[in-house]
Length: 232
Length: 366
Ligand code: HEM
Ligand code: SF4
Image (tube, rainbow over all chains, first blue to last red):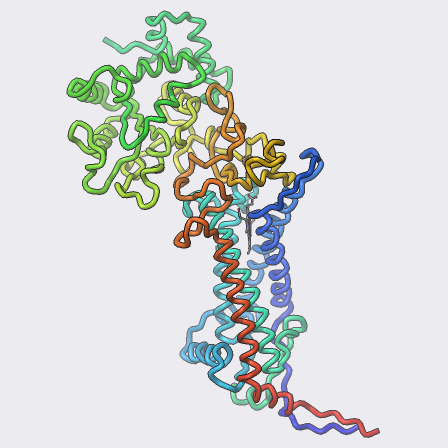
């Protein structure tokens, strides 16, 4: 068996550490649960059982699952913020904020090359590219908003101290009714985000062929040696 | 001459001591006091001069007054209101015109620092307050003057405590709740109108203790506004079981299932309707088959339509909920992504092909 090497050689880089990968999947799972149960809370199905009310508790269960997933969602995010302080360079919180000239240039590059496709080539980056980072920053902002409004609403039905920490949110937004509308409306951000996020990951994998999708499972990404040499 | 106590007034009117003690028990219960506090209530009502009361009316419909005279206990209307009206309340007092104004000023002067001020209605702040003037003076002026010497101030109803319908978008007169005008504590008793027995409870508390009951962060008495209508609703088991009315005349409506899907605002409304009920405990809206419209919540007129679970999405018409807007956005995004995928195959064809071409060729020559 003989192997003909016609491709440039690639280096394997350990990009996503275990806490980051765990965060990602727990976040995805809790978001799916929160979106599904949240939508049901807003639009419960109409059942017409002749059963007595005491024979079932499905709506109560849906709400209970929503609240449990809400706690998971929040704790998971807190752990991720902590890892953003101590994790590797790709996990750092500062990677989410475009600051330097080069980073802002990259933001436009990604828009130009990947989104609007003015450029026929592919320009891969290790870690998050700047546009992706920005989208995650927005995701974090919405997550915090959803946690604040969710626990704010929860304060009316929970004696827990976590919920009571958010008691101030409801008056600020103008009452429980308005808070519910905000909380419900913000769900659509997560729906749109999920859609776009999955597509863009698939796009990068498809165009660049560097294992973008599997990197969130194993943690590894691949980079051409010559590109790495240029960067460092 | 010292002012008579409540018992003094009642005795004058021919009530017996027994009637009086019954009234004290009722008043104590309404103020959320334990039964051993009845003695204290009786003591206060017998010895303390009844504090004078000034009841002002601004932008309102008088439904608060209407509600108040329907309190469960007849003595409340007869004694409290009768005596209230002795001082100043435009709707019920005998005096009119200059006589009434003189009466108001006399009360405010003679009892400076110890009268109770009850305010019904919001105050229009735009155009120098011309939208509500009484005796040639703006509501704001009158309110500020009356508030200055008041021992306690109560905002009756949603108008005075959060603006109610006058303050609904676009709020042409800039109707303003009184706690936003006065910079001193105000007891907010929202509702359109508030429940009569809640009103009596608040007044009784003031009369007995001479200070406000425990209030929440929005100035509402905790004992009446501490829980949502939903938390004390007798249809709540149907809610938890997921048994909902889906239209006004369906089988589920006949069975008395939960009105959540019909836009019931019980889950977002803080009030005592489920417990105290209305008209001497006869019923309340949900018991009559109609969802709560949230009349004691700030901005409830703008959170409509009443028969829809979620409020309309601002700027997209009455029918547009966040869900309709969200669904359209999702479909549009999915379409854009699909188009992008097709375009990628056209536009990046070469780049993708180059990647495939540079792939390692594994040939087997066994
Ligand atoms: C991204 C995450 C979340 C999404 C997409 C989401 C979505 C929703 C939706 C659509 C509703 C229905 C609102 C309505 O129509 O009335 C809802 C209700 C609610 N959510 Fe969330 N939610 C999220 C996170 C949270 C969190 C973290 C909490 C905190 C415990 C929470 C607590 C609540 C509460 C208390 C309600 C009201 C439930 C009721 O009264 O029955 N949510 N959520
Ligand atoms: S009818 Fe309204 S207040 Fe009663 S349980 Fe249903 S949603 Fe709650």
